[in-house]
Image 1 (cartoon, rainbow, N blue to C red):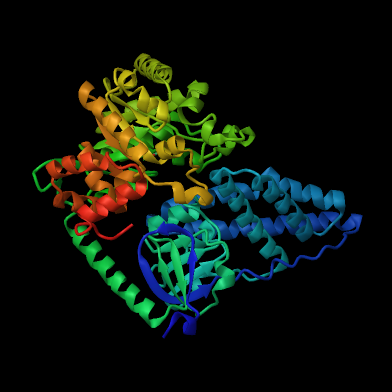
Image 2 (cartoon, protein in one colour; image 1 turned 120 degrees about the vertical axis):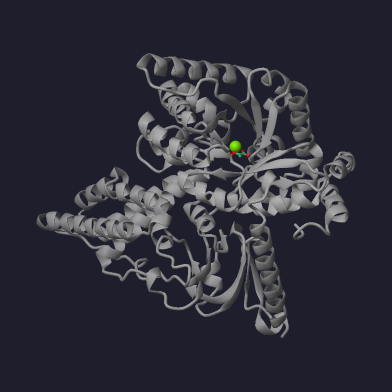
Amino acid sequence: MSAAATGERILTGISGSPGICIGKAYIVDREGVNVIEKYYIRKEKLPDEIRRFKAAVKTGKDDLAAIIKSTPAELRHHVDILETHMALYKDKMLYGRTIETIEREMVNAEWALKKVSSEVKMMFQNISDPYIKGRATDIAHVSDRIMRNLVGAGEFDIAAIDKRVILVAHDLSPADTSKIKLERVKGFVTDLGGKTSHTGIIARTLGIPSVLGLDNATSQIKSDDLIIVDGRAGIVVVHPTDKTIALYEDRLQQYEEYKAVITRSSQLPAITADGIQLQVMGNIELPEEVVSVMDHGGDGIGLFRTEFLYLRRTSFPSQEELYEQYKEVVELMAPKPVVIRTLDINGDKALSYANNSDDEVNPALGLRAIRFCLKKPNVFKDQLKAILRAALHGNAKIMFPMISSVEEVVEAKRLLEISAEELDKEGIPFRKGIKIGIMIEVPSAVIMADVLAKEVDFFSIGTNDLVQYSLAIDRGNRKVAYLYNTLHPAVIRMVKHVVDVGTEQGVNVLMCGEMAGDPYNMPVLLGLGMNELSMVPQSIPGIKDIVKKLKTEDSKLFLLEVLKQGTTSDVLNLIQNTYGNLLPEKK
Ligand code: PEP
Ligand code: MG
């Protein structure tokens, strides 16, 4: 059947998690609460109206508590997001203002809630920061649930789905996704959501194919439509032709076979065809992900993004809480290394209780990461002490993010020393001589690498931000995503400079940005002399697989050719022409 005959259409979004699935769409229908009527309440009836609102809030909280209680242990970290939602039920912005509006305007609770939640939405709309936007989504989920209780609309229940489907939703709340039964849901696609949204994080944790940020999937797809989700490419094919289905069935089979093969050998070391061993490690956000690093054959944790332990709560954690979390990770991985990165908040991960980035026009260039920590020495020292203590239980290293000048490293090290002295005075045991590293993710750090090398034991190249800051491309902006490529010749040259400086000065160089996790980049990275890589755990088997097929000596010669190229597409073509037969798929 031709595309015209079936009406085949391709929708393009953002890759949520890789994989392919083919199946019937199931629209997550949330209509019914959108039509809200306004009516006035007599003064003497206002207390009743407020009571009605409070009852709806209580039901919402009770429902959520029941979901939290029934969530299986392996999905525990979704529950933390739900616990944030619990706190939002009594949030002043939503709860307090709705009651005020009922009283002041003498209107029904539904109308007051609708008004307040649209005001909150407007407030967030002008902020480009994707993390803050994510918080707006959390508030929307909570207000949606209260509204349903007020109007008596039935809850859409994902747990009740009784056939194998692909979910199509405007948005999926963490409460929804925590109820997904993997034997029923093949994959999901949403109108909203980006890589840093909770939905994106959950999609990757569940490991089912998903495409997010499609804008209008719910209006383009109907229940029972046949669709194909290509999670890696970030596309959805609606009403595919027989030819397209056959093509994707082939790809799906190849993908499954490839995954099975590489997973089987992922517990073996990554040794090149000419005998050089690489360390292929995993990036984690939460202690629960250690298991995934182990399952995928990780040789350690090359990046522990600690900010997520701060994001899922309402105030700064104590040193003791942090220590417990870090200790768990370090102990589980021992004797393999764990690089604990100090707090990297603001930028794309704002912390509501730190009260900072809401007045920053450009948070990516604002009081982010080490800059924030140096302004809050007590918060920073709590974390440093927790890391120093946890390091006693295995092989932990410490790493400072977003370094843009030598002074920052000197100051961070001074605070580390003070933290150690304070622990000493209190008689609390901790690791002496912990290895110290910095992220190289700001162009000035690349240029100053020779001076920075004198201050630290290792560098870790963060290509996600290095590309953002050096090519001037907002990493969260879909409109300029076409320009974002880690194989830009400028990026390759910067990485080369850092590796060369590291080699000259005996400083270890690791790479933990997304560049490290794409098999396609491996011939270039190997040629550059990168031998410690860290990536999302699911990428480890693919990287180990390609490493085993490459020869370091060939890659070094190949790099000389790469360095002659003036454009990204020239580099891509060169890789394809030279290594295309070894690589899993084209970019
Ligand atoms: C990076 O910038 O490449 C990196 C690994 O850090 P993050 O993605 O957490 O900013
Ligand atoms: Mg970064």
